[in-house]
Image (tube, rainbow, N blue to C red; front, side, top):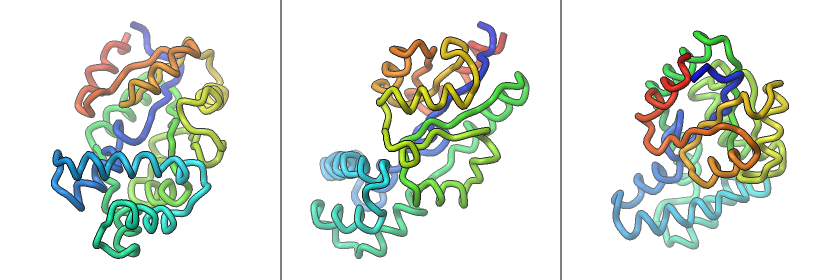
Length: 201
């Protein structure tokens, strides 16, 4: 297939490891019942973070109460803003090289709060990867709301059918496809390169 006119990509699960999985794994054994329960609580609660309704400190205080965590709120805040943010360097390289080779714009489409977005930029300089961002806290809507995808497409300046959307969430992939945006499900981070090779022309 021919290269797309622009790539719209999620951050968490594509370029950065799933934050709430990393957060939970630093508190309880990965794969345990407690891990699944805590990760579920984190993901549900993160909706308020993503929309800018709640600060990271408020989020961590509430999670500490609901999950009965022994760590202090300050420790949890540090974990949310640093320890749970883990880059996938191979995927950053793959995406930036693909974009440069084919001279296409790269845009992030992400459910993220302002403080975590700032931490991602400080740690990983994602503004060097992406030409623009459609962030939930700035737009007041989260994926799978169509408006966040429409904002990204408008910023790309390309017809939806000429874009390519990448995400690790099948739910969000389906939402993008309903808008006529060709999409690839990055089920595992290591599959990104293989998925993009389909569009190498």
